[in-house]
Length: 301
Image 1 (cartoon, rainbow, N blue to C red):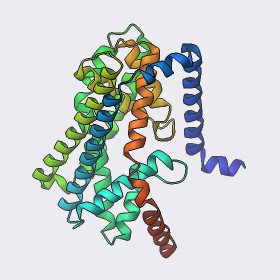
Image 2 (cartoon, rainbow, N blue to C red):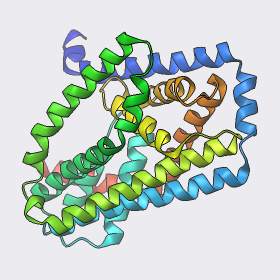
Image 3 (tube, rainbow, N blue to C red):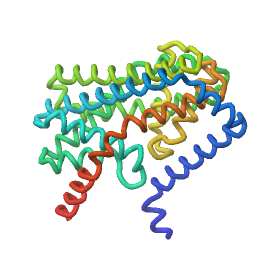
Image 4 (cartoon, rainbow, N blue to C red):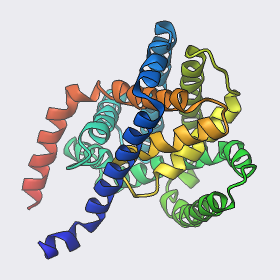
């Protein structure tokens, strides 16, 4: 048992963090009153919710396009349909299968099984992640500045420390990962444009949901708060950010966005629902990709 814990301590720690975060959300629901949250959920206009789903789906297409650009410019002649299939399957795996297999593992395994170069596909996945992080870093100041206006110096110090370390690690990795694409500035530029399109759609979806509960927050403040939430969820203390994303966004929307706790928690829950719903197309391709991945692992062994 002790050997198993040593070998799997990172996964165990993430699951404990996830359970703790979910427990805190349940505590918030009890403190605020579940009826208030249910009332806030029911108060969201149906047309606003549908519009948010459609916009979030467009954001997923930007994610597909971003990785497709990196693959093609790296010399991988992959059709857009296959890139979309692997991307949506990876999104679905990240959201619904966090215990056994990660979304990037699914994407990489599927790409290899289709016969594409392993090294380029792996490098493209790393570059894809870093392009997304760099894009979010652009709007991060819109969230950092309001946070530092709060009186909790301890919170400020903790956030600054984590973000600083993330920035140092990011700087070290970016030049290693972009070796291929730094020589192709046009492709790199289009990949950044794709990530900005993805971000713009996510921020707009959140903005529409907030309008749906008859409240309003500046679009750029939403951009900053979501970017801050994004980087907080990168800290490996939960599975796929479950619980941590909801708690972070609830805190930021209530303390900085001016929403009450019930409204903030409602928005956080709805955003998670949007991400889950827009990853469902990947369920159609998942059996085929997982089968190919298992076959590839057997052949390797």
